[in-house]
Amino acid sequence: MKPQTIVILGTGGTIAGRAARPSEALAYVAAQVGIDQLVADIPSITDNGPVETEQVSQIDSKDMGFAIWAELANRVNHHLARAEVQGIVITHGTDTLEETAYFVHAVCNPDKPVVLTCAMRPATALFPDGPQNVLDAVAVARHSGARGVVAVCAGVVHSALDVQKTHTYQLDAFSSGDAGPTAYVEAGSLRLLRNWPSAQEERAIAAMKTIAKLGAGPGWPRVEIVMSHAGASGALVDALLVQGGVQGLVVAATGNGTIHHALEAALLKARDAGVRVVRSTRCLQGRVLATPGDIFPDSGGLGPVKARVALMLSLMVL
Image (cartoon, rainbow, N blue to C red; front, side):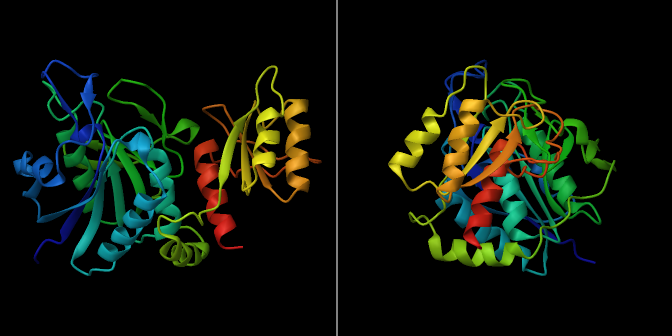
């Protein structure tokens, strides 16, 4: 039987970056190499079947925004619907990879694998990590039974629900926290440790319809993140209320969702004004566990940046 196709969507990032010298791994410009060239530089990528490439965007992922998310989701859904496509790989910058992974997971509802991958060194580095990460991502996308949205970096496969960037420069920069990785890629083969991430509920269909209408326009719900810390105040929340337009707030709380009393008072005022408030935690591991009498709902285990995406989608389909 003829092997199915893997579609590789490029969005830019360090994996497509260039530096002035091969020895330079930090002072580089992201998003300089097109996805066609990135794939052409990995000859063995087609050993197990055909690949297609498409450039969705070409940005440093710190600048990821709603317009690109909308276009990326549309292209993912387009290719998922093709019978000849086995899975999709997305090359992405590391800075906002976890947010994009969760967004795609939430709105595309994939029953095929969608694999985000990245690099911590630019394409021009003496020993770039991007090519191996792409090969590993393709191996995951070709694995029988693979489904859902995952991220692959340094041979580790992370669920879109759990993945977090936890290091500023190491090649193995991502973690799944106490949930643990989904799998490892070992010499081109997959060692599965736990189930593939489950698809989201039916809100994905409604969210995609709304996103198709909004595109890059101003209609995306405005949700901001505030942090609780020693000496916190409600000044930022008060300023957002005065400015107007904010529809949701995610608080990166301390510990098990605790909030400084001054910030909590401002958040209560925001809630009374119609702003949705959700608690997450600034801790890298663990989740907020609900207790009797909680004033604000928790994020269901999502970290602050993913909780923001989830709240935006929720506001879209109310």
